[in-house]
Image (cartoon, rainbow, N blue to C red):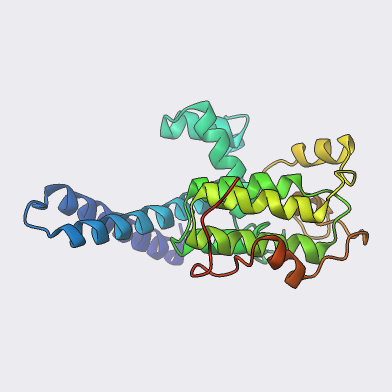
Length: 251
């Protein structure tokens, strides 16, 4: 191992040690003397930290995939690696790998870091403003956007959903997502079975921006049919572009 690699490993271990010490300290802390308002604040701060830790977990999944660690260690998929190494369920492993595919920061073969497939959602998770359930709902809604919707409109929709998630619950985001989908495809005619099959076929691994995989992975085909502007999308989502303006979801 190079001296640079050794230093990096030492720094990561130091961070993990500090994290473990912090958790141990919180487990042993006397909460009986904490005020009611501080209990709520502690819950919120802990939740924020756990959400950010989830983003770190996705980074490690991407790193392992880009290094081809599953194959190197004798596993036939990233999912199987997580099941065996972390002792998680197959369903949990599948959910983590799917999240890493959409929120992780992959690199080209030349080492250049690419933007996440859902950049605004990924940023919100790294900030600790949204959790795995928020991200799962956004990803589900984004998969339902038809192939025919333009790149700009897809990006606008993802940005709106991510901002909704920063100030609302996963249920709020789902409600907003349904309104966005209805606005983008009011007649329900823009999607087809081929498109849905294409989106299900994306796999996790090193991606090259010139290979075409990233475009399919991100679901951003260049087809100009719908000309929805960001302003129109915001209106369709009930004007929910900031946490302060996010109303309660209604069905």
